[in-house]
Image (cartoon, rainbow, N blue to C red):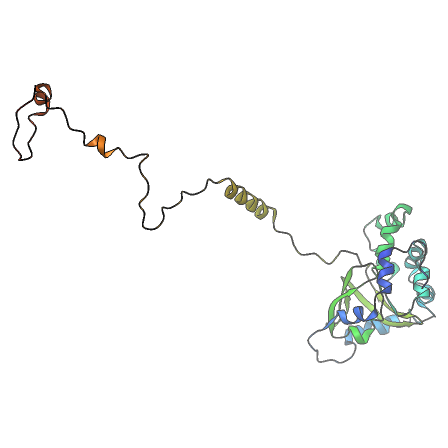
Length: 271
């Protein structure tokens, strides 16, 4: 397999990967009453079929059409022409010139700049699948399909209009010598499929505060073992000091009165 000078390791690895991975990625969607290509899709394909027809390999086909001049120029700038000519069993979601023109102002010029060729190459390989994903596999199915860029693109053939990411398939199944071309009306963007959402910042901060509070809190006082009373010797007054007798002197008798004897009678004062 011939790989061009600018071909990235990710794209090369994706091309070496088995075609079954791409073909099996989509799962059948609930069946619809119609069979084959949906009526709206068939109408769009019929209108576009006079504009795009097979004319050899994938590159020759898009070149001959006349509505993919920007795509061809971008392929040439990134040395990807050989990739699409020398490999077989490929699927290309081909954005039209109108699709490239619909990019935000200045974006196409930025991508075509020499210093951004690696980014442009990744964008282009995001439109290429290393397997033949024709209409028979798209119809009634929906799911992610791995691209040569190393990222998945969502393909949805479950409705009246087939979708690839946010782009509509305006013509399906242009069968070139080495694969299939599907015409799309928007440029696909790598990374458009969102990742799992991270926890909100407020929740993360609250969690961090809670963890800090937990770590800095003093340990709780240990309960006394079952069957044992708490040790209060450090705070309770001594029973001995509380029960010390008052000396029986005339001064104390004048203040407290005569002490009682064991019999409950006042006793005589001692000198």
